[in-house]
Amino acid sequence: MNTDETLIDAYSHAVAGAAERVGPSVVKVEVERKGGGSGVLFTPDGFLLTNSHVVHGASRIDVTTPDGRRARGYLVGEDPHTDLAVVRVHEVGLSAAPLGSSSDLRVGQIAVAIGNPYGFAWTVTAGVVSALGRTLRTGTGRLVENVIQTDAALNPGNSGGPLVDSKGEVIGVNTAMILPAQGICFAIGIDTAKVVASKLMKDGRVRRAHLGMGGQTVPIVRRLVVHHGLAKPNGVLVAQLERGGPAERAGIKEGDIVVGFDGEAIAGIDDLHRLLDAERVGARCEVELLRGTARVACTVLPGDGEARAA
Image 1: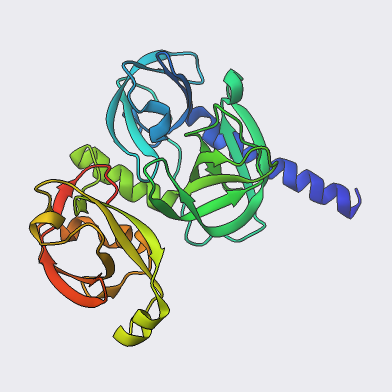
Image 2: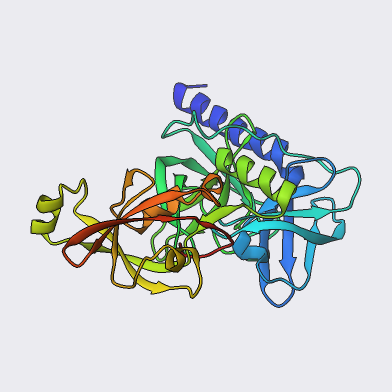
């Protein structure tokens, strides 16, 4: 056997081994009147990961295991900001997939996707990790960081299924593809998924702070940037205020431009989203604003919000 044949055989063996190890844990998720997607069992007592967009608003969730068992699925919780959800099925004898790590991945390593594209159950596609550290904007407008890009083919129905490495460990949850491009697909890193899943299993949601305002990233006139010594040339324009919300109570007004929050410079809405974490719920945070040409400050106590803009 020549070198090329040896390499091809090794690649095939790696892909087949990964599929054999994780395949028994990949389920088909069907949602009444919405179609469905895929999921991956990560505990032997029936907890599975899938995408929020697969199960959001579902009146009924049905889960089918690779051995043909069909069971009712119950939504434990979802986090639209990361497009992740946890569903529970009450079945025995389930196979849980081993979860790896997405922090030590390398560009070019084998990536195997398993799912149910267009209803073709338990389909395996293979490729490589194309890039790391990507960001992906979810339906709520927030960015998910440390997203994995892969050229392992994904199609509608793959959503929520696992992305697997050559060791047969789950490294990501498949979530999106760019159309009509080919070979540009994305998965939420498993390290992110582990954190989100633990919070969903504990509380049914991921707790985040909110200010009760709608905003958009805008450029700041250069003379004001220089005059006030701003660290960033952009800020967040307050376009809308929730009546009685934390921002309005703090004295923030429509038309203000947020340039700092809790000691951090703000260059756009994504910076603000990153800072609105659970630790800041109810905590006193200083907000720096441009109001006309003046620089003002106020103190806000962020509320406990669900999937809100800010």
